[in-house]
Amino acid sequence: GLRSSSTITSTSTSDTVTQSVIATDSATATTTDTVTITVTKPESLEERVRRQMKANFKSLPSPPWPQLDHSTAQAIANGILVGFNTTDINSNTDIDINTDTDIPTMFNNTIVTAYYAFESKHSVKEYTNWMKGLLQTSDPMIVFLQPNTPWVDIIKQHRKHAPTIIATLEFEKLVMSTTFTKEFWDWQHQIDTERLVHKSSGVYKIWNEKLIFLYNAILLNPFQTTGYAWMDIGYFRQIRDAPEPQTPLIKVNYTHPNNSMNPTTKATTTTNDMSHKNSIPVPQNKVLLLHVRNDPLDSIARVNIAGNAFYGTSQAFLNLYTKYYHTFWDWIHNHHKFIGSDQFVITETCRRHKEVCYPYFAGRFRSWFALSAVVMGEKPITEVSPHYLFKDDENDNGKNGNVNVKIPPNTSQLDVDVQVPQGQRITYCTTTGGSDSDKEIDVVVPVEECKQ
Image (cartoon, rainbow, N blue to C red; front, side):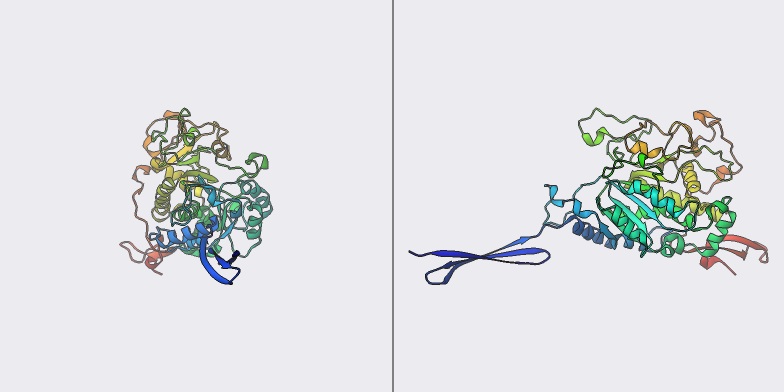
């Protein structure tokens, strides 16, 4: 009788594996049949994330002021990806890996943070210890760093366990460094009542860059999340306050579509929808913030909102971005105020625009790190802080606990609808103007308008 045998040969590329099955007649040594099977290799999560970011980058809209280009988004898209080998994209059986669909919804929130080392009120050694608490969480993370520094390797080491994008961007290429001149920042440092504590204008730039980092993370959306958070990298001063290693920080849901638009309505826990069971009553159009101090309106350095952590949906942060930088421009252009501290600016932004802010009161003031306990599900939240002074409430004569209400002059005439100088760099200078052309005045204006 005739005997037959088969030979299997394989070739592969980075994307495919090809197997050829050749059946032969052993008596005559002739080929009787050949079948070639090509199997596409599953796309890894890292490959999918890179492809998705590249596609999203190509469709970015014109950058809103104070951004002048897409440098921040480019830093994310070109970032160093670590911790992706711990997550198998094929664990989601509803995703066809051979199509161009978005990456699966594997995560709920993206945490954005940054670290740039320079002289400030806290030392590099302190931050080195503090950052361990945030970095040990399992939430996907985007970390902005100065390129070619030891911090890149430090983040790589501490984030092996969870998907992370290290976005390297030179400090001098940050939006706050490029849109605003040295003269502007020198002036801001000069009028800073805490300049001896802050030591330089570098901290001003990082503080006011936070929403720019978030904006670009949201538009590229590498992890396909609906929730976002800014957290200072040194937020957890005590490791005992951080989540257990390799567990998520954010355990509540502030992105559920059924979250009430009424900020005083309590979240339900009776629904069968488990994604809503841990929801908190923060409307999707508002950012969750901490009402940390109750400084009166006439305070020189008024802080009501903490700047170390914010939580919200992508849309809530996009809404806040617009209002924040409108307030920022109004303060420097029309009122010559200090904006170096983001806490000053966001306090005023929320005062003017209650439609974008959800300030949380922890039960006592100066509990600077109380908000993490809320998103970790350890403390309840039922309502907007009853003590926060929104502009709509300034005539309440002490209602809602606003016993420190002191209305400074002309607050009703604030330029809340001022138009930002889209696409323009800003400087501080002395020029001539007004009816008396020889009179010198100090102005904050686009560079082209500064007459020397």
